[in-house]
Length: 587
Ligand code: DGT
Ligand code: CA
Ligand code: CA
Ligand code: ZN
Image 1 (tube, helix red, strand yellow):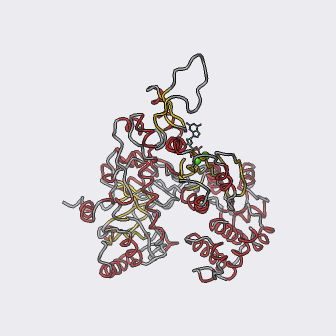
Image 2 (cartoon, rainbow, N blue to C red):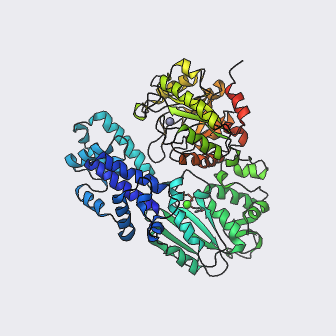
Image 3 (cartoon, rainbow, N blue to C red):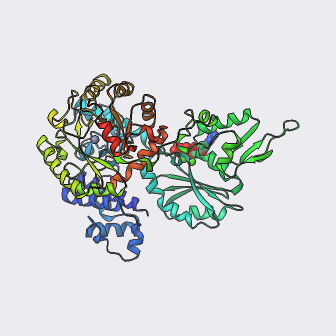
C-alpha cells in the first residue's frame, strides 16, 4: 500500500461523509490528515511497522490513525464500508463534477437513484434532472459540460500524481537482481502534463526473467497484465499501468530512444535513417544489409553502428541529442540535424517566483515563512500575490488590508534582507474586464498580477474582450493562468489565445506559465507561441503553502516542452534586471 492509496481512500471517506452531511469539523479533520499524508517522505506502512505513533503527525488524530491501521492490514476501512452501505462509493465521482458537489450528489441519488456519472448523463438526457428543485436548465447545461470533460480525461494521470504513484515501485526496483540501471521512458520522461501509462527500462545482460518476477511481485500491484523474460506489465491499485522492459547493454541507448517516444518523433527519425540506408529500431542502428531474394531481415541484421547510448543513436544519424521534452515532432528533428536545437531553460536558471499566497488570503504560511523558504531556494526575489476582494470566500484583500499587508512586508523585508519581497496582488479581472482594486493601490504595487476566477462560461468574444481590456490597464504586468484550465477537472475557458498573445506583445504584458501540475497554464504550445511573438513568459508556482513552492520544476519542464530558453523566461533575470523590467513604462 502506498501513502497515496491511503490518502485516496481517506479522501473518499471524507467525500462520502460530506454527501451524508456529517459534521464539517470531522470532514475537515480527515482532509487535513490527507494533506499531511501527501507530504510524508516515508511510507506509512514502515512507520506503523516501526511502532511509531501516528497521532504525533500534524492533523492526524486517533480515529484517522485507527483507519490507517485498518487499511494497511486489510485494504479497507470499516467506517467507509458503513457509510458506503448508505451512499454508494461511486457518488464520489459524481460530487467531484463541476456544478454538482455533495448536496446535489445526494439529491440526485435520493430523488432519481443516480449512482454513477453514466446514470447522471442518462437522467440529464431524459430531462429529469432539470425538473429537480435547485437544478434548472442552466445548472444542467453546466453539468453536461462537466461530464464531457470528465469522460475525456478518465484514464490519464497528472504528472505529479504519477510520480507519487510510482515512487514505491522505483524503490522496489532498486533491489531487482542483476540490474545495472533503471530508467524512465515514455511520456513521463518527456514530462508530458498527463501520463497514459508508465514505461520503465532495466539494463541487464542475459536472462531477464528474475527481474520481471521481481517487478510483478511488487506489493502495490493490483494485478499482473503480463510477465515474460524481457517484459512485464502491472496495474497499480490506482489503475495506473506500468510496463517494464529488460534490455541488454549493447541496445540500451536504442531502447531508451525508442521507448521514450513520442511515436511521431520516432517515425520522423526513422524515415530520416531510411534515406541514409540505415535502420533504427529498439535494438540499435544498423546498415541495411544487401539481401538475396526477399529474405526477411532479422532485428539485429546488418552492421551495428550504434545503440549502447542514446547519443550514439542520434550521432550516427547526423543529429544532435534531442532533449526528451522536445520529442514531439514539432520541428526538433530538423533542428537537431542543423545543430540548432534551443538551449532549454533549467530549474537552476530560475531566480524568483512571482505568484504565491500567504495567510492574508488562502495560503497556509505567513509572509515571513514564505520569504525564508524562497531565500532557501536561492531566489533573489519573490512576489506576494494574495487574492483581491472579489475572492470573498478566501478573504481576498480589500484596499485597506492590502495597505496593512505592505506594512508587514516592510517588517519582514528587514528581518529577511537577503531576498527582495515584491508587493503584489493577484487582482481579479471582473466580469467586464475592470480590475478588482482601485488605481491608487495598483499604482503602488511593485508588480501587478491579473487573472480570471469568475464567469468562466462567457463566450469567446466576451471573454477575450474582457481579458484584453484588463491587460490594457497601465499597471498590468502579468496575466496569470490565462486559460483557467484545471487538468482532468475543467477545460480551458473560451479565449482567443492568439489575440491575447498579440496584445501582450503590444502592451508589454508578460504571460504566466502556472507551474502547479493541476494547471500548467499556459500550456507548452501556448508558451511556444509566446516565444515566437517575443512575449515574456513568467514561470510561477502559485504556491499556497511552503511545499507548493517546490512545484517550480513542473513549470520548467512544461516550458522546456515549449522550447523556452532562459532568455524567454522573465524570472530568470537578476533582481536588478527584474526591477528594470517592472519600471519599463516609466520614462
Ligand atoms: P502515454 O503512455 O499515452 O502517456 O504516451 P507514451 O508516449 O508513453 O506512449 P506508450 O506508452 O504507448 O509508448 C511508449 C513509447 O514507445 C512511445 O512514446 C513510442 C514507443 N512506441 C510504442 N508503440 C509504438 C509504435 O507503434 N510505433 C512507434 N514508432 N513507436 C512506438
Ligand atoms: Ca507510456
Ligand atoms: Ca506503455
Ligand atoms: Zn489565481
